[in-house]
Length: 49
Image (cartoon, rainbow, N blue to C red; front, side, top):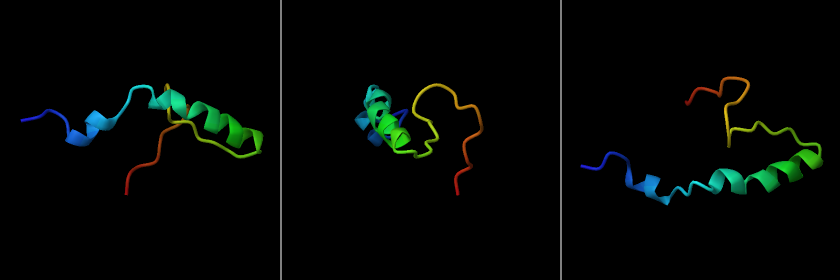
């Protein structure tokens, strides 16, 4: 029995860093971004449906 779902094997640990440039670009275009990719947010994330 696997401890984690098979889809977890497709997660690359560097993906959190890959979205950084996209976040910066959206912010430069005056977009609001709620950053949940690294660290701890300064607020609670929404509950799932």
